Length: 96
Image (cartoon, rainbow, N blue to C red; front, side):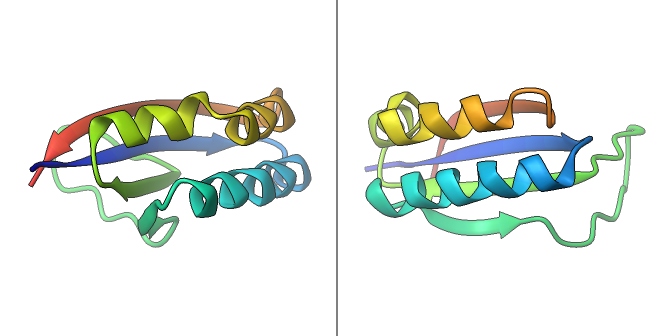
């Protein structure tokens, strides 16, 4: 059975507000069994001109589990807390 990965490219414009988002999103991760593979850290651009500020990669047991995390009441609260604190591009993808 394939796992699923949630990949987010995050740009932060208000660090204090983003801290509140991280608190809520961490709760949602715990509630939905997300395994944190990447949460920030040094980015070393290699090709294509992509220079993200912050990358997050979460592992879930399935695409349905990743979607349940995203649609949960706790993560909805996180998204509301994040409004205006930056921008985020996020996908969920099946993998091995």
